[in-house]
Length: 495
Image (cartoon, rainbow, N blue to C red):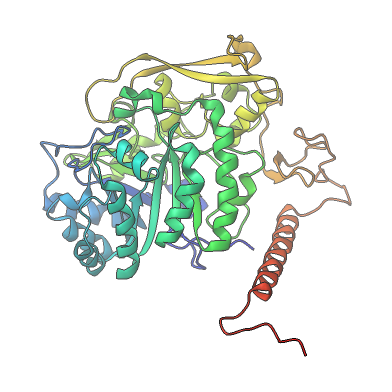
């Protein structure tokens, strides 16, 4: 059985506060809120989507922030993550954190950790902060280059140790781009050694500074190597006590999906963007958005000085993926999984072409095209304005592996779009729709069509295989221990 993720996202037994219920979705409860409380920052990240650095001129006052916390508590929010810029550069950040904790909401902080001293961490813990995630974007030289400040890597690793020693379970957040993708195994080893217990990974997305430095962006076909690597690290992490959490931009389906998407012991899969539905983002000036990463130009539901949280949620309802009427474009528009996935992360697709519904950073999409000798490439055709959360414009091109252009008509899914409940194929462990007689991925008899006596419970089958894996892993460990000489053990002398 897979361990449930606790409130901090690690492998404990408590049910995660972020797990959305059907009632949460129906009622649009803002279960998880990511709140930029200031845009002030002491780093100079070349991939920063918000172009953080200076404070906003009209950031909310302490009293206004306290009122926002009260409204979120009344709306049913269970977790708030404070970000910046750098959250602790705001003088009243501990007062805001304490108010969040006072309302029984789990309070976390995401930080670049430059200047995050042990004293600050201890004060955060006393105020009620129970999760701190530290950004580590590469080994020392790469991290310092991406973050724009020499020594920032060493400060980040030191902060992980300090967070652990103070009594907060430390986590790490890593941006994956063309420069960092090859260092993922080494980053894994480094953060495990530092004591991290959870690792959220996400793609560097084409917004703000990342548009200016677009050479660092992954090309869509590289998502195959990235996801294959991360999936292997996920399984290694389970053995070492590190929970790898794929962010919403890491997608979707394919052979790894049954293993790592769930925050509970159930087998779960990507089921669509939750922006504006059970997730909210807040900017320091009070802007209420469906997601902290989305630009306010298209995804704001109001400002807290003039709009209540409840009213903003109503304003955002028509822009959620289940209500906006988007039917998808290109491969996504033809995709077998569209009615479940709905185009993946809204942020990833919107920043490329100005609208959602066509997400080239999809594992299933990239692997399907690769089987035909095709791949996709993004090409920047317009720069982003010099303002927070600004987007440029990119063209998604289809090409053959030799780099020659291919017609877009070749880049569609060859499996017909379906609707219904997803189950696992017992042969290839990829998701298929219940009622399919043959798996559209491997061609095997699915064993799940009505009346088939050989139908197997996919949950039971996967749990059984995982149990066998666990037994084998423990067996290997016993053999390793048995082969180790004890500290005082000596070989017997020949008689």
